[in-house]
Amino acid sequence: MDIREYIQSGIIESYVLGLADAEEAAELETLRATHPEIEQAIQTFENELEVSSMSHAVPVNPDLKSQLFNQLNLETPGSNYEAVDDPKVHKLESGGKTPFIKYLAAASIILFIISAGLNVYTYSKYKKVVGENRQLALQRDQLYAKNSSIQTRFNELGKNMQLISGPDMIKVALSGVPGKENSQAVVYWSKSNKDVYLIANALPQAPKGKQYQLWALLDGKPIDAGVLGDCNSVCKLKNIPNAQAFAITLENEGGSPTPNLEQLYVMGKI
Amino acid sequence: MKAIQKYTEQELVALLKQRDPNAFSYLYDNYAAALNGIVRNFISDDQLADSVLQDSFVKIWNQASTFDSIKGRLFTWMSSIVRNTAIDTLRSKDWKNSRQNVELTDNNSEIAADNALNIDAIGLRKFVGGLRDEYKMVVEMCYFDGFSQSDIAQTTGVPLGTVKTRLRKALLELRSRIKQ
Image (tube, rainbow over all chains, first blue to last red; front, side, top):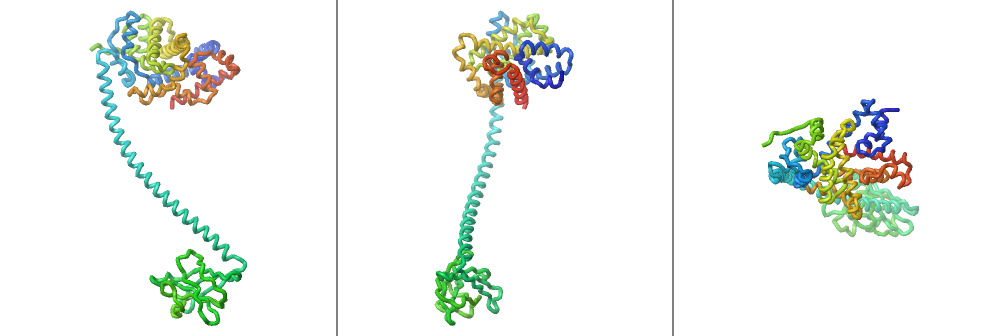
């Protein structure tokens, strides 16, 4: 027989708790006499059981002791609570020289102090957690808002992407005129419905009170194609039935009837 | 004030066998609460629990001469007496009709928690409740209801070998849970 396996089989626990049947008990009682490790395991578990029962003790009705001693016709001797190793477990049930109520009172005071301390601690922790929670809620809301604006932008981009990549779109690159070489824009002009879209890739930020305006040029004559508002990425501008070129100028806010050619930024022929 | 008495287990056993009331009083003061905790695993009713504890101590007093320290510790022996008394009481005809007492002992920890000094107490039954169903059943039937393993095998139709294995495994698991 493998003794270690036997010890770990649960037979020790079953025996000590009085649950093993006669056959199992007899076997174990024979083995414990010849195997000190089995004896040791039994004692360890018995000890564990005692310790655990002590820590799960439930205080006893203080009248019970005298009832018991009366029933057995014994004189109730003084309490031995002084000899108790674990005061936590036994003080309450001692019915002897020191009145039970004193111990109860002492215990109440101690518990009250502990409880008061715990309350302060718990309250400060609570405050902290509430603060953190508020912070998190705020961050969450910000993230939601950010997410939905990104979502919108993403959808818009997707739509624009489809629009400008259509097969009937004419792409007109507008490049910077001398002195404005860094500026750039692209016009997408639909052959079929003559709608005009613009992507201002690189135009300087318009100064306050000013707006960029797109012009379609037909036979040397400028036609107003609309001002660039606050559109994201792709701006839809005015419908232009016919044009040979496009150009952008900087005009007063709201646009002008005729272009201010001194403020010409970009231009491109179809 | 009386001189503080303290006995070793050996001395205590020897004195109890000689029916020494002081030793018995010492035993009561030191172990009644722990044994009451065991009673409360079985019985939640205050009055009935008191009577089981009292009956148990009567048996401990009367049967001390039969205690054999070769077979185990005093506390183990007393625990068995308490468990058997609790089971017998629950089975007796007065209480046969109130089986709910056993179920009600799930409230054990609440009872203990009412008592300020036992805020953390958790009854054995709470631990048993955490076991998987087939383990829970054997422990309930064997430890709490006092059925033998062969009774359980017969009643449930589970083979005896399986009952034994389940009981042992369940007890091992309980032990490790209680230790944690």
